[in-house]
Length: 86
Image 1 (cartoon, rainbow, N blue to C red):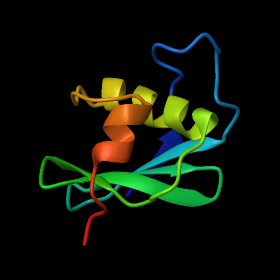
Image 2 (cartoon, one colour):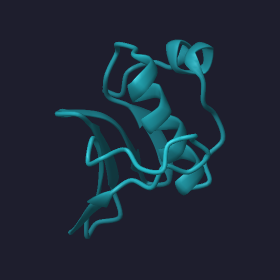
Image 3 (tube, helix red, strand yellow):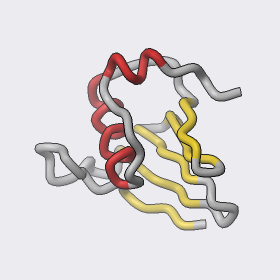
């Protein structure tokens, strides 16, 4: 397992100041924690929504996560259109 701060890719900020943490598991799963909440993950190469709320700051974290792992998507309308992972 490896844990690191998400780089602020495509964001005006230089850093998310340890408020966006990525965990890469040995089985290949990857999770994004925004503040103290795990909001999404990549499992078997598929993006999964784990948090059904919305905040502008967390959306910036999610957008950077998507760019970091080269996954299409992003933005409020896209996020609201996703179903929660089971």
